[in-house]
Image 1 (cartoon, one colour):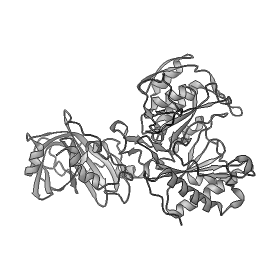
Image 2: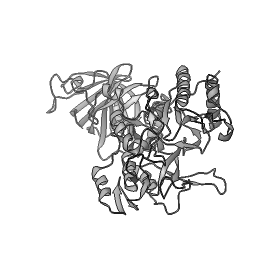
Image 3: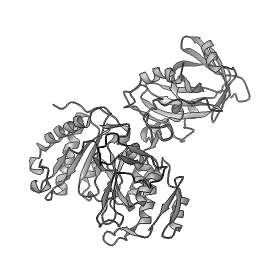
Image 4: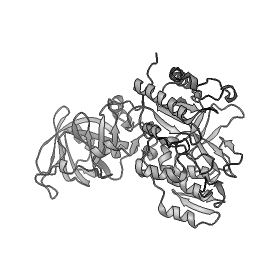
Length: 526
């Protein structure tokens, strides 16, 4: 039986559009030179420990309610469950409520193991397996013995590693993050995306959880004169015109140079990458800086380095852009920034299913006479309507004059279906404040009123990415906010800048992370 066949029961129990667990859809490789094991402390309907051994390309798994112990001869009940994919070996996070195994998971122990039998798969089939573990917490010989069907007993042999009265509950921390289940549940910092390659499937939700910019690499940028080669995030980038002013200062603030911009890009990349991964990227370039005439670049130029990920649109019409940049690593975003791309706009669909959006978008586009308080009122009306429907949504300042509302959705509905849903919702909301809204397309025909732009829900359309700068004085950024921040009278759509948003992230985390984590179906509107 192949690893893929072994994983069929695992996949059959899960909806990978909703759960962040790995799907195991990728082809499994051969066993590692050293077989690996993991024990995960899993609080689902009941607390238990998931004991998993690498055998023939999958993780053969048992649920152990009381957890393994180093106490010699103490028998623990163990229940043989479905094999899990190898990618699960470092899964730590929260499985959504309502999904199979919903609850919080930590990597309680991890390491390598050696079977005493020549063929461990046969030993399991025969009902008894002897495993020597080399972990952070568990060491020595463990024995699995089947009693009937899927019921097994797990015990530790009397050896040099045996310890009397050893209780796993007295060792509750993860060996990867040092956190307890309570801490992971309260503040998950990583997400497993089953639809990504193994190397990039674990995504950072907070700036301190990903591949941070190396302080030494940032210092190396400062040491460069006006140009040079900067080694950053494992790549060598040729950077130029480092002292060129790209953003004029705001008020008495200092102007922002290209060096400053590259530094910001390196620092924000681990946070923004989950919003860009596997999505075609449109760049708004201003080689001569904000305040000058910029231009859109969709087609990846032929001189782009080979290491950049890219996507060829098979449906591109003659003369249309075909090859797009895909920013699947931090250095790719730095490459774009070095080319003068001051704004980053990602598609709302991914390259494997470009016609299936993962977000529904509401763009609150102010008119010439729209007051900020009016725009806030429209945003709150949408929030209340979405809350009434039980739909999770998140708000983002555009960095210019508007507000955007992003709704994470399970892939499936077409753009046309999503657009029709958003239009119906917004027209219902507008009925509560008709004096604030116009449905005319041209701004000149709106009598200064705001437009609730549902038309952004279309293939190839983009909205500015979270934390992308905008080409204006002071380098404002498109900043996600908490809904209750709309009550702050000091808030404006360009409140946060490249200089202030990093401090905000360090203290508050990313208010937008649910957009990456959550997947939901849009309810039927009456």
